[in-house]
Image 1: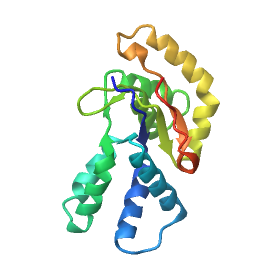
Image 2 (image 1 turned 90 degrees about the vertical axis):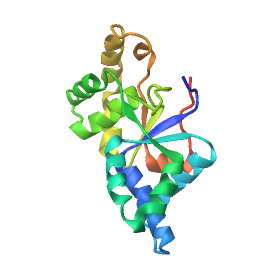
Image 3 (image 1 turned 180 degrees about the vertical axis):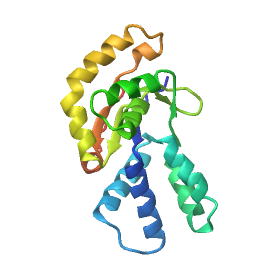
Image 4 (image 1 turned 120 degrees about the vertical axis):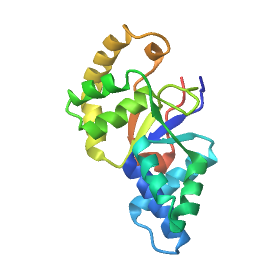
Amino acid sequence: MSDQTRFLLDKVTARRILEGLLKLAEARGLTAEEVVALDLYERAGSHGLRQFMVPSTESVLRRLGERPRYTAIIHLFRQYVEVAFPTRYFKRWARRLQGYGFTPEDAGVLALGTFGTDQDARILGMHAVITFEQPMVTQWATQRAANQAHFAAMQQHLPIPYRQTDLPQVLRSEDVARGLNLPSPS
């Protein structure tokens, strides 16, 4: 398994990166969120960190990729961003997270951060989930102890390598972009 730091971009963060790339290409002004997202994208890419997107973002990119206006931007984005794929126990963990008050979409992102892999199934889990969604960050911090206890109980019954994965940190895009203080692999 890779020990390279890896993180999952939620769909809003990925969208802000893509919007920013498009606006730069078209010489248009950027929003503050797009500047933050682009800074995160560029710094992570230049540091060789692995960035992942959720599968629903990839689905949107496939449809947009058929339009010439977006082809080059999507190609640039994909140079540094891979697709995360759900593994076994993803659905179970997502259901349990919903029981802790996470929306189905947020639970899916968090479960993918825990039980996600790359195309070659060489990794398991992410070190961090990066989001602009403050409610998700707050909910994760509030429920961290309960989630950790429930996860530890679940892990005892899982086979290796699933038993060895950790819960990701959930970080605001702005905080990561400021200092690129992503967690390091253990």
